[in-house]
Length: 235
Image 1 (cartoon, rainbow, N blue to C red):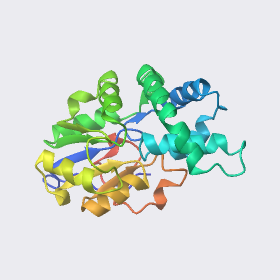
Image 2: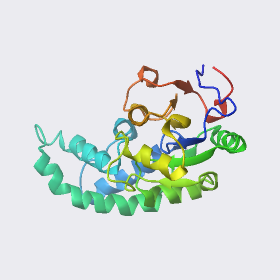
Image 3: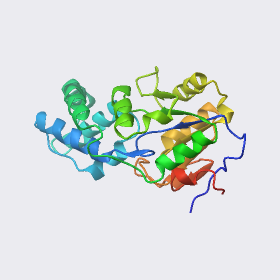
């Protein structure tokens, strides 16, 4: 059952929404791009179930986590030097394959379109803030018909630091012209919640998505929703 912050009239001026695991289930895209990347590097494959806990902290973190995971059976403890030696080739291959697969193995979660329509209908400004690189995020939003809802879209490479650092959220509030205390963050993980807490924004988490392998209701958040469509229906 959802526990939410009702969108009372005038309670917020804007809403900032995460992308992967919040609006779009992109695990299939990640898994396919990584499968192709590992094949190109002649490394063992990895299942989507192993990839899921690695998602949410940016592509750089994801790739280093994947390399560490696949190298572990081959070496007692793969050291950072080995991972970093492979990283440039892995990054190049991943970028190429992700651009080819982006949006082809993913789906918009139920209720997202209705929820975004409701937020726009309430007169709220919307931004998408994701740790996914902007060159991946913007085409995905277009492919899924979501780009028209947002006044601003910022990827993980838009600012000097990524979530959970508060800088991206504060900069997004600045771009929207809204105060953090009147800007609601919607995400799917502890990463989003930590960002919001540090920036001074209220935060609601969806109960699906990718929370690094941990139950999302264990996270310190102001509310939880089972669908974006539920937002504002009451707690």
